Length: 612
Image 1 (tube, helix red, strand yellow):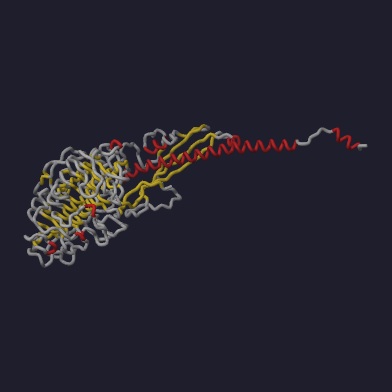
Image 2: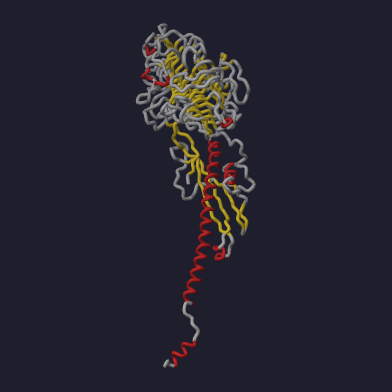
């Protein structure tokens, strides 16, 4: 018989399993909350990634415009006022805002309680940054200017909103960019940022680039017709000088570090397709490319010597730059055949480095130049020279008669002297003038220069500096060379070398350096092959500003007015063993112009970089 307790217990309701139900309900609610929370977190994460992508794109676009501005070329096609903090409200057309919008962030501004976004632009160095700012003497890796993009994305949330009481949550992204001092091999650079024909290969001229970096030619102009060449036939895949038949050819078939094809970079990217006169092979291509700034922007012009070269001590040189072999007590002095490398049986004029206040004019004579810097600053010009009339970017046709600082006239021939000079192993001609009404001058080599009957130039070992790289065999440089020969300086680390960190020894530096204040269309360089022409060194013709500095350049048409006309000759080649940097480059004539670029010559350039 059951006890009274058992009877009462049996009458109570059955509640077994109710705890389990409560636990299941609690777990279910927790799981739903976790799922909701996870959905919100995943949404925020994806929005954070998208915002970072937009910030990176906007930052990269903005710093590219800053690079162009820092190079002194303005900001083509943009009304963006740089260095002033801004946001993208009402600024949808400027580069960083355009790229942010095309990545999903229009920067229209934040709206309370609703999905929206904000894009802000600033130019301050981040407080936590460890980057080194560039000073008066930039070093590799330093930063010239900063650009920062901050993106705020106001995202709609669900479960998290139930907890916080807000239907939205902000996620942010930041990108920091900078214009950085970098080291890179430099191709032929045409600097003008807007000229409609910054590079022209006209007539039946053929430009053949041998070796060098993977990009052989860079045209900085944003104009879509800025690079042109025309010809009749295709270029065969072969090596050697003059590989392209037809007219107006740009041949990069032998360009690049391994001589198997290099690229042509064009900021304006004419038509997106190569010009009809362009040829390369393998990985070489015609490509859209960001501008490469002036590699010599921070190379200061030389100080004017206080003395002209004389038969005395000379412009600070020791020993006497004119040896006892001089036959005349003048500058230049007359020396006999074979003296200090004189190749002419009739004797030579021997020039020494220093200040020249009158143009150097060589006509119907042979001249040799001792190593050193020739600072040519005429106070007056007495003669004009017919240099043709290449078209230029801003002012139509050039007058047919032109003043010059340095002239190799009819019947002339020039060679390097074997004298010690200043010990640099080569020459640098700084071409200036008195400014004002007198103006400036440059260099002119006549078509009838270089054809004198003299000893051929046979010292092929002298093409390269000690420890440097000899010209490649693909260049086709003759073992016995007639015509004019000039060589740049070799002193490692010298001011006018312009290259540091090269991996294959020293390279020759600046051979011609035009005063950057020279914006006169009738005072620009013109060289013709004549009886043969070899220029071993770098050619630099850039008009920046009236102060003659390499930074803070005036925008066109006030700046970037320098142009360089280089002509070949069918009877003998024109060779350039080095780099050309010019505002406009016109290659013309009816002969072959061959250039050997050194892939190991490393120059300092400004580079747009995503820092963080």
